[in-house]
Length: 331
Length: 286
Image (tube, each protein chain N blue to C red):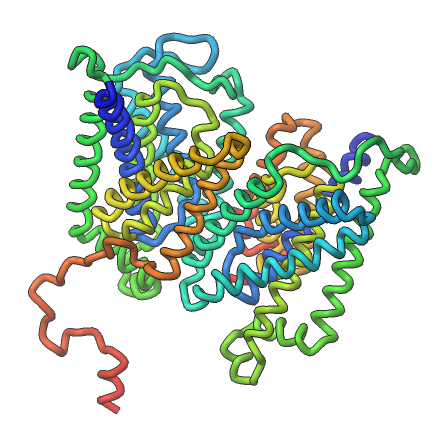
Protein backbone atom coordinates (compact mmCIF):
# COMPACT_ATOMS: atom_id res chain seq x y z
CA UNK A 1 0.00 0.00 0.00
CA UNK A 2 2.84 2.31 0.96
CA UNK A 3 4.71 1.42 -2.19
CA UNK A 4 1.77 2.05 -4.54
CA UNK A 5 1.31 5.44 -2.87
CA UNK A 6 4.94 6.25 -3.53
CA UNK A 7 4.72 5.07 -7.14
CA UNK A 8 1.63 7.13 -7.87
CA UNK A 9 3.28 10.16 -6.22
CA UNK A 10 6.39 9.69 -8.37
CA UNK A 11 4.22 9.43 -11.50
CA UNK A 12 2.53 12.69 -10.52
CA UNK A 13 5.85 14.33 -9.66
CA UNK A 14 7.54 13.50 -12.96
CA UNK A 15 4.44 14.30 -15.04
CA UNK A 16 4.39 17.82 -13.56
CA UNK A 17 8.18 18.17 -13.79
CA UNK A 18 7.94 17.11 -17.44
CA UNK A 19 5.25 19.68 -18.23
CA UNK A 20 7.41 22.34 -16.56
CA UNK A 21 10.42 21.08 -18.54
CA UNK A 22 8.50 21.77 -21.78
CA UNK A 23 7.66 25.28 -20.52
CA UNK A 24 11.31 25.89 -19.60
CA UNK A 25 12.48 24.63 -23.01
CA UNK A 26 10.06 27.09 -24.65
CA UNK A 27 11.31 29.95 -22.52
CA UNK A 28 14.87 28.91 -23.32
CA UNK A 29 14.26 29.59 -27.03
CA UNK A 30 13.09 33.11 -26.13
CA UNK A 31 15.28 34.06 -23.16
CA UNK A 32 18.17 31.61 -23.38
CA UNK A 33 18.80 31.94 -27.12
CA UNK A 34 17.60 35.44 -27.99
CA UNK A 35 17.42 37.28 -24.65
CA UNK A 36 13.70 38.03 -24.92
CA UNK A 37 12.01 38.66 -21.57
CA UNK A 38 8.65 36.94 -21.80
CA UNK A 39 7.12 37.47 -18.35
CA UNK A 40 3.78 36.18 -19.62
CA UNK A 41 4.64 32.48 -19.90
CA UNK A 42 1.43 31.72 -18.00
CA UNK A 43 -0.56 33.39 -20.79
CA UNK A 44 0.68 31.05 -23.52
CA UNK A 45 0.40 28.11 -21.13
CA UNK A 46 -3.26 29.08 -20.60
CA UNK A 47 -3.94 29.60 -24.31
CA UNK A 48 -2.60 26.12 -25.07
CA UNK A 49 -4.58 24.55 -22.24
CA UNK A 50 -7.90 26.27 -23.08
CA UNK A 51 -7.54 25.63 -26.83
CA UNK A 52 -7.02 21.94 -26.15
CA UNK A 53 -9.84 21.79 -23.61
CA UNK A 54 -12.32 23.50 -25.95
CA UNK A 55 -11.39 21.27 -28.88
CA UNK A 56 -11.34 17.89 -27.14
CA UNK A 57 -14.19 17.98 -24.61
CA UNK A 58 -17.65 16.64 -25.49
CA UNK A 59 -20.23 19.24 -26.48
CA UNK A 60 -21.14 21.69 -23.73
CA UNK A 61 -23.33 24.75 -23.38
CA UNK A 62 -21.32 26.08 -20.43
CA UNK A 63 -18.48 27.43 -22.57
CA UNK A 64 -17.42 27.88 -26.17
CA UNK A 65 -16.46 24.66 -27.90
CA UNK A 66 -16.78 21.08 -26.87
CA UNK A 67 -15.89 19.88 -30.37
CA UNK A 68 -15.10 16.33 -29.24
CA UNK A 69 -11.92 16.21 -31.32
CA UNK A 70 -9.00 13.82 -30.76
CA UNK A 71 -6.04 14.90 -28.59
CA UNK A 72 -3.76 15.56 -31.54
CA UNK A 73 -6.23 18.13 -32.95
CA UNK A 74 -6.21 19.76 -29.50
CA UNK A 75 -2.43 20.03 -29.61
CA UNK A 76 -2.54 21.47 -33.14
CA UNK A 77 -5.15 23.98 -31.97
CA UNK A 78 -2.91 24.96 -29.06
CA UNK A 79 0.01 25.44 -31.47
CA UNK A 80 -1.96 27.57 -33.95
CA UNK A 81 -3.56 29.73 -31.22
CA UNK A 82 -0.22 30.40 -29.53
CA UNK A 83 1.54 31.11 -32.83
CA UNK A 84 -1.06 33.66 -33.95
CA UNK A 85 -1.16 35.49 -30.60
CA UNK A 86 2.64 35.46 -30.23
CA UNK A 87 2.98 36.86 -33.75
CA UNK A 88 0.65 39.77 -32.97
CA UNK A 89 2.39 40.56 -29.65
CA UNK A 90 5.79 40.21 -31.29
CA UNK A 91 4.95 42.58 -34.12
CA UNK A 92 3.94 45.25 -31.61
CA UNK A 93 6.61 44.92 -28.93
CA UNK A 94 9.72 43.23 -30.30
CA UNK A 95 11.08 46.31 -32.02
CA UNK A 96 11.18 48.07 -28.65
CA UNK A 97 13.50 47.67 -25.66
CA UNK A 98 13.39 44.45 -23.61
CA UNK A 99 11.59 46.23 -20.76
CA UNK A 100 8.59 46.94 -22.97
CA UNK A 101 8.35 43.30 -23.97
CA UNK A 102 8.43 42.35 -20.28
CA UNK A 103 5.60 44.70 -19.30
CA UNK A 104 3.59 43.92 -22.44
CA UNK A 105 3.77 40.16 -21.85
CA UNK A 106 2.76 40.58 -18.17
CA UNK A 107 -0.12 42.71 -19.42
CA UNK A 108 -1.24 40.15 -21.99
CA UNK A 109 -1.13 37.33 -19.43
CA UNK A 110 -3.05 39.33 -16.81
CA UNK A 111 -5.63 40.61 -19.33
CA UNK A 112 -6.11 37.05 -20.54
CA UNK A 113 -6.66 35.90 -16.94
CA UNK A 114 -9.28 38.62 -16.48
CA UNK A 115 -10.92 37.41 -19.68
CA UNK A 116 -10.83 33.76 -18.61
CA UNK A 117 -12.42 34.77 -15.28
CA UNK A 118 -15.07 37.18 -16.59
CA UNK A 119 -16.13 35.82 -20.00
CA UNK A 120 -18.12 33.00 -18.42
CA UNK A 121 -20.05 32.03 -21.56
CA UNK A 122 -16.83 31.51 -23.56
CA UNK A 123 -14.39 30.09 -21.03
CA UNK A 124 -16.58 28.76 -18.25
CA UNK A 125 -15.39 31.60 -15.98
CA UNK A 126 -14.14 30.69 -12.51
CA UNK A 127 -15.80 27.29 -12.82
CA UNK A 128 -13.36 26.50 -15.62
CA UNK A 129 -13.63 23.51 -17.95
CA UNK A 130 -13.92 20.00 -16.54
CA UNK A 131 -13.95 16.51 -18.01
CA UNK A 132 -11.09 16.97 -20.46
CA UNK A 133 -10.44 13.52 -21.94
CA UNK A 134 -7.00 11.99 -21.43
CA UNK A 135 -5.38 10.53 -24.56
CA UNK A 136 -4.33 6.87 -24.73
CA UNK A 137 -5.96 6.27 -21.33
CA UNK A 138 -7.09 2.77 -22.39
CA UNK A 139 -3.68 1.70 -23.73
CA UNK A 140 -2.57 0.05 -20.47
CA UNK A 141 -5.58 -1.15 -18.44
CA UNK A 142 -5.61 0.64 -15.09
CA UNK A 143 -2.42 2.53 -15.93
CA UNK A 144 -3.78 5.75 -17.35
CA UNK A 145 -1.46 7.94 -15.29
CA UNK A 146 1.57 5.86 -16.28
CA UNK A 147 0.65 6.11 -19.96
CA UNK A 148 0.28 9.83 -19.56
CA UNK A 149 3.73 10.06 -17.96
CA UNK A 150 5.13 8.23 -21.01
CA UNK A 151 3.41 10.75 -23.28
CA UNK A 152 4.98 13.59 -21.26
CA UNK A 153 8.43 11.98 -21.39
CA UNK A 154 8.18 11.45 -25.15
CA UNK A 155 7.09 15.09 -25.61
CA UNK A 156 9.98 16.36 -23.48
CA UNK A 157 12.38 14.19 -25.48
CA UNK A 158 11.06 15.43 -28.83
CA UNK A 159 11.12 19.10 -27.80
CA UNK A 160 14.56 18.67 -26.22
CA UNK A 161 16.07 16.98 -29.30
CA UNK A 162 14.50 19.54 -31.63
CA UNK A 163 15.86 22.41 -29.51
CA UNK A 164 19.30 20.79 -29.44
CA UNK A 165 19.25 20.38 -33.21
CA UNK A 166 18.13 24.01 -33.57
CA UNK A 167 20.89 25.17 -31.26
CA UNK A 168 23.52 24.17 -33.80
CA UNK A 169 21.61 25.72 -36.71
CA UNK A 170 22.50 29.01 -38.43
CA UNK A 171 19.12 30.31 -37.20
CA UNK A 172 20.03 30.06 -33.51
CA UNK A 173 23.53 31.36 -34.33
CA UNK A 174 21.85 34.58 -35.43
CA UNK A 175 19.58 34.57 -32.33
CA UNK A 176 22.60 34.21 -30.03
CA UNK A 177 24.36 36.97 -31.92
CA UNK A 178 21.31 39.20 -31.40
CA UNK A 179 21.45 38.40 -27.69
CA UNK A 180 25.11 39.43 -27.42
CA UNK A 181 25.20 42.37 -29.81
CA UNK A 182 22.11 43.41 -31.67
CA UNK A 183 23.78 46.32 -33.48
CA UNK A 184 26.48 44.08 -34.92
CA UNK A 185 23.83 41.73 -36.30
CA UNK A 186 21.96 44.68 -37.80
CA UNK A 187 25.19 45.92 -39.33
CA UNK A 188 25.82 42.56 -40.96
CA UNK A 189 22.52 42.91 -42.78
CA UNK A 190 20.28 40.52 -40.86
CA UNK A 191 16.61 41.33 -40.34
CA UNK A 192 16.84 41.39 -36.54
CA UNK A 193 13.12 42.05 -35.97
CA UNK A 194 12.17 39.05 -38.08
CA UNK A 195 14.53 36.72 -36.22
CA UNK A 196 13.26 37.98 -32.87
CA UNK A 197 9.62 37.46 -33.87
CA UNK A 198 10.41 33.96 -35.14
CA UNK A 199 12.13 33.06 -31.89
CA UNK A 200 9.24 34.49 -29.85
CA UNK A 201 6.66 32.53 -31.86
CA UNK A 202 8.62 29.26 -31.66
CA UNK A 203 9.07 29.58 -27.88
CA UNK A 204 5.40 30.47 -27.35
CA UNK A 205 4.26 27.49 -29.42
CA UNK A 206 6.32 25.18 -27.20
CA UNK A 207 4.62 26.76 -24.14
CA UNK A 208 1.27 26.10 -25.81
CA UNK A 209 2.18 22.41 -26.17
CA UNK A 210 2.92 22.36 -22.42
CA UNK A 211 -0.55 23.85 -21.90
CA UNK A 212 -2.12 21.07 -23.98
CA UNK A 213 -0.34 18.48 -21.84
CA UNK A 214 -1.39 20.21 -18.63
CA UNK A 215 -5.07 20.37 -19.59
CA UNK A 216 -5.18 16.66 -20.37
CA UNK A 217 -3.12 15.84 -17.27
CA UNK A 218 -5.34 17.57 -14.69
CA UNK A 219 -8.50 17.04 -16.83
CA UNK A 220 -9.83 20.27 -15.29
CA UNK A 221 -8.62 23.82 -15.87
CA UNK A 222 -9.66 27.14 -14.36
CA UNK A 223 -8.09 30.64 -14.40
CA UNK A 224 -6.55 29.94 -10.99
CA UNK A 225 -4.11 27.44 -12.48
CA UNK A 226 -2.54 30.16 -14.62
CA UNK A 227 -1.55 32.45 -11.79
CA UNK A 228 1.72 34.32 -12.56
CA UNK A 229 3.45 32.52 -9.70
CA UNK A 230 2.87 28.99 -10.99
CA UNK A 231 2.70 29.73 -14.69
CA UNK A 232 5.51 32.25 -15.09
CA UNK A 233 7.67 32.80 -12.04
CA UNK A 234 8.49 29.14 -11.33
CA UNK A 235 9.42 28.61 -14.98
CA UNK A 236 11.85 31.53 -14.89
CA UNK A 237 13.44 30.25 -11.69
CA UNK A 238 13.76 26.81 -13.32
CA UNK A 239 15.47 28.12 -16.44
CA UNK A 240 17.82 30.49 -14.59
CA UNK A 241 18.69 27.86 -11.97
CA UNK A 242 19.25 25.21 -14.64
CA UNK A 243 21.24 27.45 -16.94
CA UNK A 244 19.87 29.93 -19.47
CA UNK A 245 20.75 28.93 -23.01
CA UNK A 246 21.34 25.29 -22.11
CA UNK A 247 18.51 22.89 -23.03
CA UNK A 248 19.78 20.25 -20.63
CA UNK A 249 19.83 22.98 -17.99
CA UNK A 250 16.20 23.85 -18.79
CA UNK A 251 15.08 20.24 -18.26
CA UNK A 252 17.38 19.71 -15.26
CA UNK A 253 16.30 23.02 -13.72
CA UNK A 254 12.65 22.06 -14.14
CA UNK A 255 13.14 18.75 -12.31
CA UNK A 256 15.36 20.24 -9.57
CA UNK A 257 13.19 23.30 -8.86
CA UNK A 258 10.01 21.20 -9.01
CA UNK A 259 11.67 18.92 -6.42
CA UNK A 260 12.59 21.94 -4.26
CA UNK A 261 9.07 23.32 -4.65
CA UNK A 262 7.55 19.97 -3.64
CA UNK A 263 9.97 19.69 -0.73
CA UNK A 264 8.95 23.13 0.59
CA UNK A 265 5.38 21.83 0.52
CA UNK A 266 6.46 19.01 2.81
CA UNK A 267 8.42 21.33 5.13
CA UNK A 268 5.63 23.90 5.47
CA UNK A 269 3.13 21.08 6.11
CA UNK A 270 5.05 20.40 9.34
CA UNK A 271 4.10 23.87 10.62
CA UNK A 272 1.21 24.18 13.10
CA UNK A 273 -2.21 24.15 11.41
CA UNK A 274 -2.79 27.80 12.38
CA UNK A 275 -0.06 28.61 9.82
CA UNK A 276 -1.83 26.79 6.97
CA UNK A 277 -2.79 29.93 5.08
CA UNK A 278 0.70 31.32 5.48
CA UNK A 279 2.45 28.14 4.33
CA UNK A 280 1.83 28.84 0.62
CA UNK A 281 3.23 32.35 1.00
CA UNK A 282 6.28 30.97 2.76
CA UNK A 283 6.99 28.62 -0.15
CA UNK A 284 6.83 31.47 -2.63
CA UNK A 285 9.11 33.55 -0.43
CA UNK A 286 11.69 30.76 -0.36
CA UNK A 287 11.60 30.31 -4.15
CA UNK A 288 12.04 34.09 -4.59
CA UNK A 289 14.98 34.01 -2.20
CA UNK A 290 16.46 31.09 -4.13
CA UNK A 291 16.20 33.10 -7.38
CA UNK A 292 18.05 36.07 -5.84
CA UNK A 293 20.78 33.82 -4.43
CA UNK A 294 21.29 32.18 -7.83
CA UNK A 295 21.34 35.54 -9.65
CA UNK A 296 23.95 36.88 -7.24
CA UNK A 297 26.14 33.80 -6.72
CA UNK A 298 25.75 31.73 -9.88
CA UNK A 299 24.01 33.69 -12.65
CA UNK A 300 25.08 31.15 -15.29
CA UNK A 301 23.05 28.44 -13.53
CA UNK A 302 23.87 24.86 -12.54
CA UNK A 303 24.52 23.79 -16.14
CA UNK A 304 26.04 26.82 -17.88
CA UNK A 305 25.56 27.31 -21.59
CA UNK A 306 28.21 25.59 -23.70
CA UNK A 307 28.23 27.22 -27.12
CA UNK A 308 29.22 24.96 -30.02
CA UNK A 309 32.83 25.26 -31.17
CA UNK A 310 33.28 27.26 -34.35
CA UNK A 311 33.58 24.98 -37.39
CA UNK A 312 37.20 24.56 -38.54
CA UNK A 313 38.77 25.73 -35.29
CA UNK A 314 39.83 29.27 -34.61
CA UNK A 315 40.78 30.14 -38.19
CA UNK A 316 43.81 32.12 -39.29
CA UNK A 317 44.68 35.02 -36.98
CA UNK A 318 43.78 37.56 -39.66
CA UNK A 319 40.17 36.34 -39.67
CA UNK A 320 39.69 36.54 -35.93
CA UNK A 321 37.77 39.49 -34.65
CA UNK A 322 40.00 42.21 -33.25
CA UNK A 323 40.09 42.17 -29.45
CA UNK A 324 41.00 45.32 -27.52
CA UNK A 325 44.47 43.78 -26.91
CA UNK A 326 45.06 43.37 -30.65
CA UNK A 327 44.27 46.98 -31.32
CA UNK A 328 46.49 48.02 -28.42
CA UNK A 329 49.41 46.09 -29.95
CA UNK A 330 48.95 47.76 -33.30
CA UNK A 331 49.20 51.13 -31.70
CA UNK B 1 -23.54 63.77 -17.50
CA UNK B 2 -23.11 64.46 -13.79
CA UNK B 3 -22.34 60.76 -13.39
CA UNK B 4 -19.51 61.04 -15.92
CA UNK B 5 -18.08 64.07 -14.09
CA UNK B 6 -18.30 62.11 -10.86
CA UNK B 7 -16.34 59.26 -12.47
CA UNK B 8 -13.75 61.79 -13.67
CA UNK B 9 -13.37 62.96 -10.07
CA UNK B 10 -12.84 59.35 -8.93
CA UNK B 11 -10.43 58.99 -11.84
CA UNK B 12 -8.39 61.95 -10.58
CA UNK B 13 -8.18 60.32 -7.15
CA UNK B 14 -7.05 57.00 -8.62
CA UNK B 15 -4.82 58.86 -11.08
CA UNK B 16 -3.04 60.69 -8.23
CA UNK B 17 -2.17 57.33 -6.68
CA UNK B 18 -1.04 55.87 -10.00
CA UNK B 19 1.03 59.01 -10.66
CA UNK B 20 2.93 58.67 -7.39
CA UNK B 21 3.80 55.08 -8.29
CA UNK B 22 4.68 56.01 -11.87
CA UNK B 23 7.02 58.81 -10.74
CA UNK B 24 8.90 56.28 -8.58
CA UNK B 25 9.15 53.76 -11.42
CA UNK B 26 10.26 56.50 -13.81
CA UNK B 27 12.86 57.82 -11.36
CA UNK B 28 14.39 54.39 -10.75
CA UNK B 29 14.43 53.72 -14.48
CA UNK B 30 15.97 57.08 -15.32
CA UNK B 31 18.67 57.06 -12.66
CA UNK B 32 19.40 53.40 -11.93
CA UNK B 33 18.56 52.18 -15.43
CA UNK B 34 16.19 49.26 -14.77
CA UNK B 35 12.46 48.59 -14.59
CA UNK B 36 11.45 48.13 -10.96
CA UNK B 37 8.73 45.49 -10.98
CA UNK B 38 8.68 45.28 -7.17
CA UNK B 39 7.33 48.82 -6.96
CA UNK B 40 3.72 47.74 -6.48
CA UNK B 41 4.72 45.51 -3.59
CA UNK B 42 6.71 48.34 -2.03
CA UNK B 43 3.40 50.24 -2.09
CA UNK B 44 1.76 47.27 -0.37
CA UNK B 45 4.32 47.44 2.41
CA UNK B 46 3.79 51.20 2.73
CA UNK B 47 0.07 50.55 3.08
CA UNK B 48 0.63 47.91 5.79
CA UNK B 49 3.10 50.13 7.67
CA UNK B 50 0.36 52.77 7.66
CA UNK B 51 -2.13 50.17 8.87
CA UNK B 52 0.24 49.21 11.71
CA UNK B 53 0.56 52.88 12.72
CA UNK B 54 -3.22 53.40 12.71
CA UNK B 55 -4.42 50.09 14.17
CA UNK B 56 -1.64 49.30 16.63
CA UNK B 57 -0.06 52.66 17.49
CA UNK B 58 -3.31 54.62 17.23
CA UNK B 59 -1.86 57.33 14.97
CA UNK B 60 -4.16 59.61 12.93
CA UNK B 61 -3.92 59.22 9.14
CA UNK B 62 -1.43 62.10 8.42
CA UNK B 63 0.95 60.85 11.13
CA UNK B 64 0.54 57.27 9.93
CA UNK B 65 1.53 58.48 6.47
CA UNK B 66 4.80 59.90 7.84
CA UNK B 67 5.47 56.65 9.71
CA UNK B 68 4.81 54.60 6.55
CA UNK B 69 7.08 56.87 4.49
CA UNK B 70 9.99 56.46 6.90
CA UNK B 71 9.54 52.69 7.22
CA UNK B 72 9.19 52.12 3.45
CA UNK B 73 12.23 54.28 2.65
CA UNK B 74 14.25 52.13 5.07
CA UNK B 75 12.81 48.97 3.48
CA UNK B 76 13.84 50.21 0.01
CA UNK B 77 17.37 50.93 1.25
CA UNK B 78 17.62 47.48 2.87
CA UNK B 79 16.49 45.74 -0.35
CA UNK B 80 19.01 47.78 -2.33
CA UNK B 81 21.80 46.93 0.11
CA UNK B 82 21.00 43.19 0.27
CA UNK B 83 20.10 42.48 -3.35
CA UNK B 84 20.21 45.23 -5.98
CA UNK B 85 23.64 46.53 -4.94
CA UNK B 86 25.13 43.06 -5.48
CA UNK B 87 23.74 43.07 -9.02
CA UNK B 88 24.79 46.57 -9.99
CA UNK B 89 27.10 45.27 -12.72
CA UNK B 90 24.40 42.99 -14.16
CA UNK B 91 22.48 43.90 -17.32
CA UNK B 92 19.18 45.84 -16.94
CA UNK B 93 17.24 42.73 -17.95
CA UNK B 94 18.86 40.60 -15.21
CA UNK B 95 18.00 43.43 -12.79
CA UNK B 96 14.42 43.33 -14.04
CA UNK B 97 14.20 39.58 -13.34
CA UNK B 98 15.68 40.17 -9.91
CA UNK B 99 13.02 42.80 -9.17
CA UNK B 100 10.33 40.26 -10.13
CA UNK B 101 11.84 37.90 -7.56
CA UNK B 102 11.78 40.70 -4.98
CA UNK B 103 8.16 41.42 -5.95
CA UNK B 104 7.07 37.87 -5.15
CA UNK B 105 9.15 37.85 -1.96
CA UNK B 106 7.56 41.08 -0.69
CA UNK B 107 4.07 39.94 -1.65
CA UNK B 108 4.44 36.65 0.20
CA UNK B 109 6.17 38.36 3.15
CA UNK B 110 3.17 40.71 3.49
CA UNK B 111 0.92 37.66 3.44
CA UNK B 112 3.01 35.90 6.10
CA UNK B 113 3.13 38.94 8.40
CA UNK B 114 -0.37 40.35 8.04
CA UNK B 115 -2.39 37.46 6.56
CA UNK B 116 -4.38 37.56 3.32
CA UNK B 117 -7.71 38.87 4.63
CA UNK B 118 -9.01 42.28 3.60
CA UNK B 119 -8.47 45.02 6.15
CA UNK B 120 -9.62 48.65 6.34
CA UNK B 121 -8.01 51.75 7.82
CA UNK B 122 -11.27 53.15 9.08
CA UNK B 123 -14.47 51.41 10.14
CA UNK B 124 -17.89 52.92 9.60
CA UNK B 125 -19.35 55.37 7.13
CA UNK B 126 -17.99 58.88 6.63
CA UNK B 127 -20.31 61.44 5.05
CA UNK B 128 -18.88 62.78 1.78
CA UNK B 129 -18.49 66.45 0.95
CA UNK B 130 -21.06 67.60 -1.60
CA UNK B 131 -20.29 70.23 -4.18
CA UNK B 132 -22.47 71.01 -7.23
CA UNK B 133 -24.00 67.55 -6.87
CA UNK B 134 -20.60 65.86 -6.86
CA UNK B 135 -19.45 63.71 -3.97
CA UNK B 136 -15.97 63.56 -2.53
CA UNK B 137 -14.93 61.64 0.56
CA UNK B 138 -12.71 63.59 2.99
CA UNK B 139 -10.04 60.93 2.48
CA UNK B 140 -10.17 61.48 -1.28
CA UNK B 141 -9.58 65.17 -0.82
CA UNK B 142 -6.67 64.25 1.44
CA UNK B 143 -5.27 62.02 -1.33
CA UNK B 144 -5.47 64.72 -4.00
CA UNK B 145 -3.95 67.43 -1.78
CA UNK B 146 -1.31 65.04 -0.42
CA UNK B 147 -0.27 64.04 -3.94
CA UNK B 148 0.02 67.67 -5.05
CA UNK B 149 2.14 68.53 -1.99
CA UNK B 150 4.44 65.56 -2.62
CA UNK B 151 4.91 66.44 -6.29
CA UNK B 152 5.72 70.08 -5.45
CA UNK B 153 8.20 68.95 -2.78
CA UNK B 154 9.81 66.57 -5.26
CA UNK B 155 10.10 69.34 -7.86
CA UNK B 156 11.76 71.66 -5.31
CA UNK B 157 14.09 68.86 -4.20
CA UNK B 158 15.21 68.02 -7.73
CA UNK B 159 15.76 71.63 -8.75
CA UNK B 160 17.00 73.40 -5.61
CA UNK B 161 19.16 70.94 -3.70
CA UNK B 162 22.65 69.80 -4.68
CA UNK B 163 21.73 66.11 -4.45
CA UNK B 164 18.60 66.73 -6.52
CA UNK B 165 20.67 68.31 -9.26
CA UNK B 166 23.13 65.41 -9.04
CA UNK B 167 20.21 63.02 -9.53
CA UNK B 168 19.07 64.83 -12.65
CA UNK B 169 22.64 64.81 -13.93
CA UNK B 170 22.91 61.09 -13.37
CA UNK B 171 19.62 60.47 -15.15
CA UNK B 172 21.10 62.37 -18.07
CA UNK B 173 24.48 60.63 -18.28
CA UNK B 174 25.93 58.26 -15.67
CA UNK B 175 29.58 58.21 -16.77
CA UNK B 176 29.71 61.96 -17.29
CA UNK B 177 28.38 62.58 -13.77
CA UNK B 178 30.96 60.20 -12.29
CA UNK B 179 33.74 62.11 -14.05
CA UNK B 180 32.49 65.39 -12.63
CA UNK B 181 32.85 63.91 -9.14
CA UNK B 182 29.20 63.23 -8.30
CA UNK B 183 28.94 60.66 -5.51
CA UNK B 184 26.86 58.12 -7.43
CA UNK B 185 26.34 55.85 -4.39
CA UNK B 186 24.76 58.76 -2.54
CA UNK B 187 22.52 59.41 -5.54
CA UNK B 188 21.45 55.75 -5.50
CA UNK B 189 20.58 56.03 -1.78
CA UNK B 190 18.51 59.18 -2.34
CA UNK B 191 16.77 57.63 -5.33
CA UNK B 192 15.55 54.77 -3.14
CA UNK B 193 14.53 57.14 -0.34
CA UNK B 194 12.38 59.13 -2.77
CA UNK B 195 11.02 56.07 -4.59
CA UNK B 196 10.20 54.51 -1.19
CA UNK B 197 8.53 57.72 0.01
CA UNK B 198 6.31 58.01 -3.05
CA UNK B 199 5.49 54.28 -2.97
CA UNK B 200 4.53 54.51 0.71
CA UNK B 201 2.29 57.51 0.07
CA UNK B 202 0.65 55.79 -2.90
CA UNK B 203 0.13 52.64 -0.80
CA UNK B 204 -1.36 54.49 2.18
CA UNK B 205 -3.65 56.54 -0.11
CA UNK B 206 -4.79 53.41 -1.92
CA UNK B 207 -5.51 51.52 1.30
CA UNK B 208 -7.27 54.55 2.83
CA UNK B 209 -9.49 54.83 -0.26
CA UNK B 210 -10.28 51.12 -0.66
CA UNK B 211 -9.34 47.93 1.19
CA UNK B 212 -5.97 46.57 2.20
CA UNK B 213 -4.69 43.15 1.12
CA UNK B 214 -1.29 41.70 0.11
CA UNK B 215 -2.00 42.10 -3.63
CA UNK B 216 -3.16 45.71 -3.45
CA UNK B 217 0.07 47.13 -4.92
CA UNK B 218 0.79 44.31 -7.36
CA UNK B 219 -2.68 44.78 -8.87
CA UNK B 220 -1.78 48.39 -9.63
CA UNK B 221 1.60 47.55 -11.23
CA UNK B 222 0.21 47.36 -14.75
CA UNK B 223 -1.55 50.78 -14.66
CA UNK B 224 1.59 52.27 -13.06
CA UNK B 225 3.87 51.04 -15.83
CA UNK B 226 1.27 52.02 -18.40
CA UNK B 227 1.31 55.56 -16.94
CA UNK B 228 5.11 55.72 -16.88
CA UNK B 229 5.31 54.53 -20.49
CA UNK B 230 2.46 56.78 -21.57
CA UNK B 231 4.31 59.76 -20.15
CA UNK B 232 7.61 58.59 -21.62
CA UNK B 233 9.53 56.48 -19.10
CA UNK B 234 12.19 58.52 -17.28
CA UNK B 235 10.13 61.71 -17.56
CA UNK B 236 8.68 62.62 -14.14
CA UNK B 237 6.18 65.19 -15.37
CA UNK B 238 5.10 62.82 -18.13
CA UNK B 239 4.49 60.19 -15.43
CA UNK B 240 2.09 62.56 -13.62
CA UNK B 241 0.11 63.29 -16.79
CA UNK B 242 0.17 59.59 -17.74
CA UNK B 243 -1.09 58.60 -14.29
CA UNK B 244 -4.01 61.05 -14.34
CA UNK B 245 -4.99 59.98 -17.87
CA UNK B 246 -4.89 56.26 -16.98
CA UNK B 247 -6.84 56.89 -13.76
CA UNK B 248 -9.62 58.84 -15.47
CA UNK B 249 -9.90 56.45 -18.43
CA UNK B 250 -10.06 53.42 -16.11
CA UNK B 251 -12.90 54.93 -14.08
CA UNK B 252 -14.87 56.34 -17.02
CA UNK B 253 -14.47 53.07 -18.94
CA UNK B 254 -16.77 51.37 -16.40
CA UNK B 255 -19.72 53.05 -18.16
CA UNK B 256 -19.20 50.94 -21.29
CA UNK B 257 -17.02 48.03 -20.15
CA UNK B 258 -17.56 45.40 -17.46
CA UNK B 259 -15.77 46.75 -14.32
CA UNK B 260 -14.04 43.36 -14.08
CA UNK B 261 -11.84 44.50 -16.95
CA UNK B 262 -10.86 47.81 -15.29
CA UNK B 263 -7.21 46.81 -14.70
CA UNK B 264 -6.85 45.88 -18.37
CA UNK B 265 -8.04 49.26 -19.67
CA UNK B 266 -4.82 51.07 -18.74
CA UNK B 267 -2.89 48.28 -20.36
CA UNK B 268 -4.83 48.57 -23.61
CA UNK B 269 -4.09 52.31 -23.70
CA UNK B 270 -0.43 51.45 -23.24
CA UNK B 271 -0.47 48.95 -26.11
CA UNK B 272 -2.08 51.54 -28.39
CA UNK B 273 0.63 54.01 -27.29
CA UNK B 274 3.36 51.47 -28.04
CA UNK B 275 2.03 51.18 -31.57
CA UNK B 276 1.38 54.86 -32.22
CA UNK B 277 4.01 56.67 -30.17
CA UNK B 278 6.36 54.20 -28.48
CA UNK B 279 8.40 56.73 -26.53
CA UNK B 280 5.50 58.44 -24.77
CA UNK B 281 3.67 61.71 -25.12
CA UNK B 282 6.59 63.67 -23.67
CA UNK B 283 9.40 62.05 -25.66
CA UNK B 284 11.08 60.21 -22.79
CA UNK B 285 14.14 57.96 -22.59
CA UNK B 286 14.84 55.40 -25.29
